[in-house]
Length: 339
Ligand SMILES: NC(=O)c1ccc[n+]([C@@H]2O[C@H](COP(=O)([O-])OP(=O)(O)OC[C@H]3O[C@@H](n4cnc5c(N)ncnc54)[C@H](O)[C@@H]3O)[C@@H](O)[C@H]2O)c1
View (cartoon, rainbow, N blue to C red):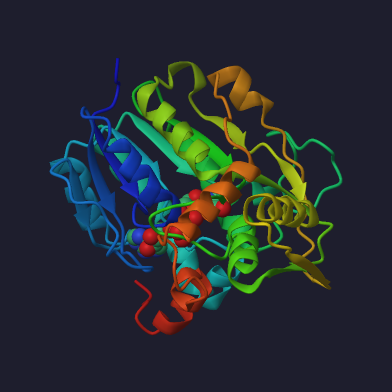
C-alpha cells in the first residue's frame, strides 16, 4: 500500500532532486510538487501532468504555506539548500537563512497543514574528521564548517516537532555519485570521471582522505522507500546512508581501470597536495537492519553510468562552470538577497 500521494520535494531542480522527481513520476499514484528557486537551472525539469513546478524561495513562508495547504501535501522530502562548504561560505549570511533559519518554518508549516511524513536530508559530513573506523549515528558530531554545523543543527529542530501524526526521519547521506538530469561536476567521483574522459588524466588532491559514497540511484531508492513506508516504528530516527568508504586515490584507480578495460585508454593519476583534510568512514548497518534498505550499486557502477552518458552524447561541455555550484553562485551572487 502506498502511504503517500502528494509529495513535496524541496530542491527538486538540483542534482539529487531532479533524478528523484523523474523516478517518482514512474509511480502513477504519486503527485509531485517541486519547490525550488532553481539556482542551477530548470531547463531539464520534467513535463508531466502529475508534476508541478513552483519556482520560489524557501524563505517565502507565505507561498510555502499556500503550496503545502492547496496541494494537500502528505509527505515532504527536504533537499533544498546551499549544498556544500564553498557555496555556503560565499554569502554565509544568506546561506544560513536558507539552510537553517527557515528550516523551523518549513517544519511547522508542514505540521500545521497535516503533512504526515517529513524526510530531512542532512549530511554525513556532520561527523567531521575522525579516526573512528566505523562511524555510526551515535558518534559525536564535530562539524568543521558552517555548512556542516547548520545541517546538523536542523536535526533536533525536526525531532522537537514530531509526534504520532507528524512523523519524520533524518538521513545523513554520503557523497552522491552518478548520472542525473542535472549533473554536478563538483562531487568527487563525478569530477574525477570528467577529468578522465575529457582530459585523459585525473588530478587527485591529497588522495589519502577516506570518504563514503552513495550511488544516486540508491539515494533515490531510499527516498522512494521512505515515501512508501510508514514511519511509525522509526519516528525521529537518524540514518547514515553510504556504503563504500574509499580513499580518493582508490576512486581514481577504479576509474583508471574502467577506462583501460572499456576504452583501452591509459589515464594518468597526478597527485597534488591538498588542505582538504575531511576524512571519515561511515557505517550504514542501521539503515539496512532497521529499514531493510539494500544498497545495490557501487562507485564502479556510477563511473560506468557516467561513461555511458559521455559516450552517448548526453554529457557534453562538462567543464562549463554551470556544472559547478560554486561557479554558478559566484555569477549569481548579486541576485541572491537577504530576506
Ligand atoms: N550531493 C551530495 O553529495 C550530498 C551529500 C550529502 C547530503 N546532501 C544533501 O542532499 C540535498 C540535495 O543535494 P544536491 O546535491 O541535490 O544539491 P543541489 O545543490 O544540486 O540542489 C539543491 C537545490 O536547492 C535549491 N535551493 C537552494 N536555495 C534555495 C532556496 N532558498 N529556495 C528554494 N530552493 C533552493 C537549489 O536551487 C538547488 O536546485 C542537500 O540538502 C544536500 O545537503 C547531498
